[in-house]
Image 1 (cartoon, rainbow, N blue to C red):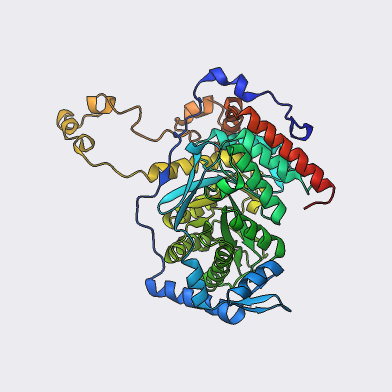
Image 2: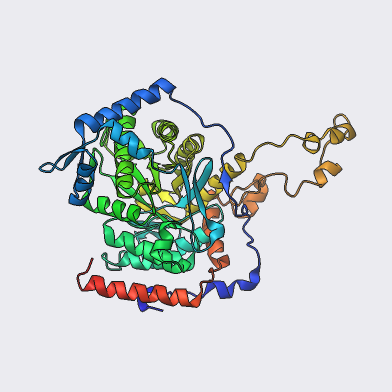
Length: 515
């Protein structure tokens, strides 16, 4: 194996092969679906008012696109393009025409097809946090991102069934060269996990590397992968109304190769968007639809998601805030807009807390409820987000997985049938009696209720005798135990060799100045 990708830690797959199932209680791997009607905060008239405002933004104000190739595509499609200012204005008829070619649902298939990611309709998926430059845990403190911690986060994402896929660089491994470290992170994603992942789309080269490496891991050609996508990316709009050149190139590369794109404006109310929720939603809608149109100009039918990341700032300091009532309402309302255009919906639960504490939990849960009630299909940054996205936290990862599992159980419909109504048991238990020993309880007690992996239900004396550990301290024990129990998924030897060769070749090319 390449020296840059070697890991000095023991091979956990071999070491733990005989351990059997995890001792950490967790829900089994499953396809999570939302069987309930979506919440609607906006009336039908309000949705149309926001739509109309966003069309006026595209028609009257336009969007700056810093990519000659993208400008040419828009111009060829009939858009009004000012090459001097790189401003593009879209007619609402063109927008409607192109959005109509985008699929309402699709799936991503990683090297293990059992971990396929359905997107659209009532499917829900949860991802690992992505993008922080820092890492934190309660024992070692806050530190710069590094490849060892990166690999441990990927192991945790693989170990916990509630995490459906991996985001883009859970932490930046800053000790590696910035121009090629994406190859090391892709390699870790594909070898330490068999789940789908988000590729970096900052330019064509990084996007194409992720696409090609996923194809190698699945034993497919690029043409075969084009019709059976395996990876996605997030295209962040530089709000207000700017697509930078590298992001535009990444978007076009992904669409050209049939891979998924989530176009996501970063609309912080009061900073990068109007201070009002209606104004921010109109801007978000215009920017998101603009990116959706570009994917369809590249390749009609290219898989694309409506992305939303609208929150607010602290008006006293200008600092971003997450998990606020406004953020939660935006998560719900954005789902209504995504459904209006029949597009899969990406959203995020976040927190501004600097520690894995009560604030971090309540802010994340607040936004998570908005994502669930808004029928988010891809709930991005779902586990490990801390410090407004600047830190990936091991303890917060565990706290978030617990919250995700609570949601998964909540989404299971209530059964009402003869056995569940328990009339026989009600008839057997006398007035003032109890149900502990009744046969109805005994037949169901082991699986009757959700078993938490982090909550502690001991009485005070028992909790005190066990060490008086709060939830954060217990989370430290859980992530360390999970790493002990982790088992590396086996990859075919020829595909592993092909991946190693690809990484070595691309590092040499990048080092010689090739993109």
